[in-house]
Image 1 (cartoon, protein in one colour):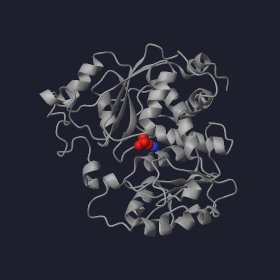
Image 2: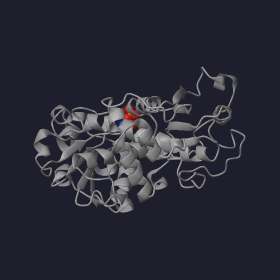
Image 3: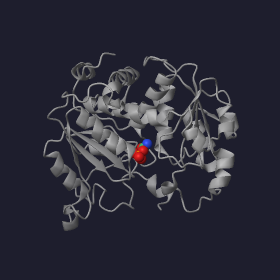
Image 4: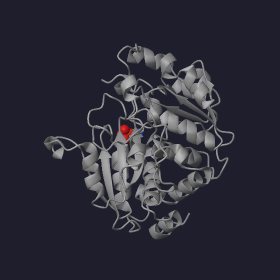
Length: 365
Ligand code: CP
């Protein structure tokens, strides 16, 4: 298990053999998450700030139109990305995001190739990761979907590769497509249009481990942009006051207070893979008692309030079985809408206008 201070390091971190610019022999300079001037507007998606409000609404609108294709209950396939090649580069475990991108790309007619810079590749013969990726880039991939434990790594790749870069989760930094699919799920649940101010009057409680998680950060940025009222809650170091101050959101003293009147309870798992060894956490039963979403606690939500969880869930820890599988849960709907969001994001990365994507898929909304 890595310490949080390691995982939160930028890709210039000394701990990461083979990923520094100098070590790769390319002299990349400062590649931290805070120096992402290399991104190409309208194509790369490395963090929520890459989207302005108009583009956010256009993406959500396109994704909404693509839901039947994503859900498999409309047209089965489109050719609007026929001929496009997508490189899937997942260096951290994933079930939903990796497969969701892959299915989304295939349903739009694109081809997907997986790559792992591991012992089965020429890494075994001493090739650096960056050299490998530059060689793959020379094969003409249109887009690269990247998950990595290093904060800022996808943003740095934008300065190194011709292919457009989509961040599928980088360390504790951001997970922009998760936030987009969460937003789409909330808009659908409350019958709101994807327009500026769409979430005005909606209170969203984001609860659990915000400090070591990327989903919370991307959501705090995106949902605020759309007008939501935000409150965070979690045990001490997992939801620190500094984070609430950074994002200028309310910090609730406990879970019950956070849930009171909330329209959305977004539950986040403890990011155990990113916790410092020194951090003491209660056992699962104690955590659930204090910070887990139970059926009883659901009563605090506003009328019609819904439950989101990005997955993977730790049942009986941050969320009870009865809640995860209950009528207020939108957990599986998030996954379906995630496919639609990723179709829209892939089309944008490949330079296909969203309106054309919608028209080509036969979607009507
Ligand atoms: N929500 C999410 O990122 O899930 P995976 O880690 O399974 O991709």
